[in-house]
Amino acid sequence: MGNEHPLKKVLVPYILTGYGHFIIAQAIALYLKKKKPDWDVRLFELASEFKDQALERFYKQAWRYILQMPTIAAQVVFGVEEALPALSSFVNGRLIHSAVLKAMGFLAGYKPDLIMSTHWGCTHIFNQARKKVEYEVPLWYVYTELAGGYQLMNCGADKYFVMSDEAGKALQGEGIAAEKLERIDLVVRPQFADQIISKESARCGLGLPVDDFILLFSVGGEGIGPTFSFINAFIKTVKQGRILVATGRNEKLCDELQIKFKDKRVMPLGFREDIERLMAASDVMAGKCGASYSMEAVIMRRPFIVTSIGAPSERPNMKYIVENGFGWYASTPAHFTKLLEIFMTDKTLYQNALNKLGKISRINGAETVAADIVQYFKR
Image 1 (cartoon, rainbow, N blue to C red):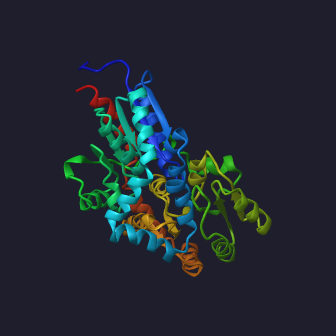
Image 2 (tube, rainbow, N blue to C red):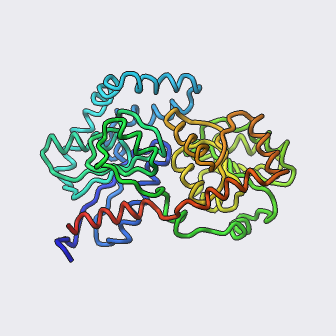
Image 3 (cartoon, rainbow, N blue to C red):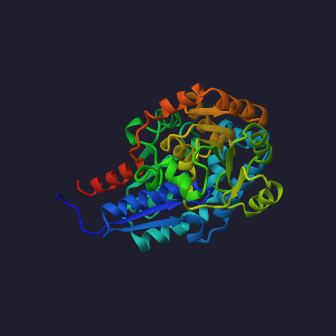
């Protein structure tokens, strides 16, 4: 039985920028509670829990602003981070000062036994806080992108989980020691790995034709990105099919789509808890390549057409999809149309992607992280 105590407090902090950090935090917490139902596993959205306006502005509102920027302008913002990492770290340090003070008080009161962070900003904050109050608590971090890296990702964690070799190399390039890295499988919500729905069952449940070509198009949790021109391209190209458009939390976009497109082939859908059912029903997925959506496409073994990169930090996700043969990058409606035309006439390209996706493990990295946490307390 080891030295394990019956009750542990595990803090799982995240910041709700988009939806990916929460999805990963939630998945880890769910597996951990499944393994240790008596433990206190606390999901913790830092900005709202601390009621910190600086975090709201810098992490959440600024992220939405970057998503709405033209691509070139967004690249300039991220170019500053690449060219002047010291300046970026300095600005970040000043902005999180009040949050660090609040984290110091929180640690003193809550006294977690381990912190499992899914956002680099949370990791920076709790790393500084634990040092200032001299509270020795393990601090682990899941790097939520599939590849690429920035200096701010070197956030003081004791252990970094990465979901690809590319991501591991990128973090080492930012000065993180190899012995602090652990390679895990893709992290998705349990229903994506544990309860795979058949295409036929998903379509029947959604009232969709069993034999149609169905494409799921997503513009991410914030519902930001080019949409109308790609829907028009689909309508012109695919005569027997449906395009399901997931607009996330953008209710205005969903309403606009319902007004503009009366064609039954276009199905605007607002925020859904059962997104895995939509993915299972689809033949192909398309849209913005946020990390979670990209990982879910791979786990569900659905070829992915990346049509937009929400922020430069998502570009490595696109490269991961394309370079591994899991999908394609079609940033213009014209390129998108050409791909659809190929799918309609020749299945070779589509089948090649399916074959490569079929080799991917369906083990959920979230369960591995949870098992690591349990094992840590058995030492």
